[in-house]
Image (cartoon, rainbow, N blue to C red):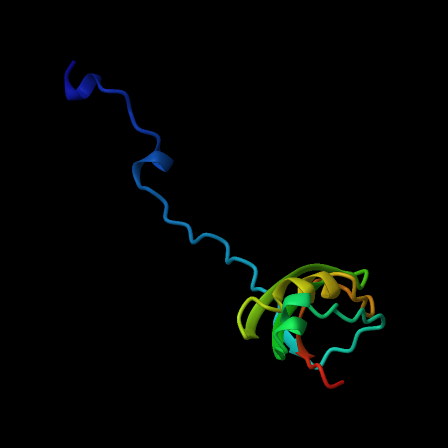
Length: 115
């Protein structure tokens, strides 16, 4: 086969096209100071109560358009891991005002034996 006998390449196949992929959707901005319509208080962990341990948890909650919480992510906890699970369990039952799209809210919980 000679060059003259080689099949012609279609014009649109000659140069690779470099298209910019579509931009990934930006995650929702984290909102602070959100107020729930329904707030469920977390249980005090027996291990923390027995050890006279107090602390706090900062969490991000994903609020769906119907106002329910679809996910909870612990951002910071002090002391670490002691109050995380009870905070998640309670926050998953919170309800917020309905909206047009998912919202990420930041919530602070304080665990105190004196209150």
